[in-house]
Length: 333
Image (cartoon, rainbow, N blue to C red; front, side):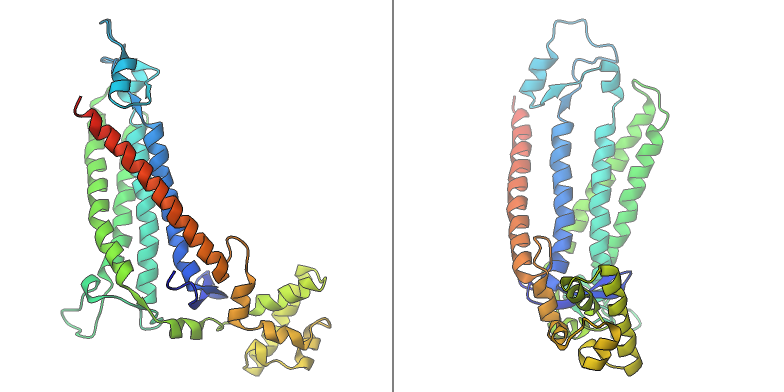
């Protein structure tokens, strides 16, 4: 909740777009990681299928019950087809995909932290524990952990691609090719577990410069959409309102001034429906507070979003932990 009331420019195409709550900006990463957590729980349910009783490929002639074995070992079901069961590595491919997606999302965190910590931005101050200097340039403070997060993503994607290539066109039942899955899976799991602690530490210890973010928020005419929205509320079509807002930007550029510095004459020349009361809307705090949709950037909306994220994370984590403990319990049978 610390940065819910902090203001920053939002970006599209790496260009200033609209002012936003910086808490909203940070929460987007939690949402993507929440999807990853959901994928893990889905994977645990979908892959809870016991292959026991499949034999080499044709099942077993012995008087055994795969259903009883599956139940005692904590599986939810028994494999439907013995030939498929001995050759199926979907669960490994899915695990590698989930790790690759986590890595992809972490790489986006790494990229943003790297950008935000540049001299040009100056938004993020990294803790010394998660950055390094240079052997030549003593002033440097390099975002090593953030860069490693970007780099590891390529490794995770490579392992996923490698396994899919092994499985492509493979005949059913067992083939020795399948032993290749272990190295890829173990490597991805090991490297993800290595990455998470330092990346979490980097995020938790980063200090953000509220003043610099607030100063940057209105730059690049990020409040132009407020003019368009004002006209739409007066019954003007958005296409026409968009053109009028663009005209206001052109006038401001020609005058080398900000939108809120335009005169009544300037506004009327852009559109007859534009009155002086639009100027009070050309304020980043007002613009942010107006976006009150449940997924919007208004602080009161962001507070609810974060509360929901925390609640969902707690519930899903508890479920995953319970499933893991259930599996561990079967090891004592």
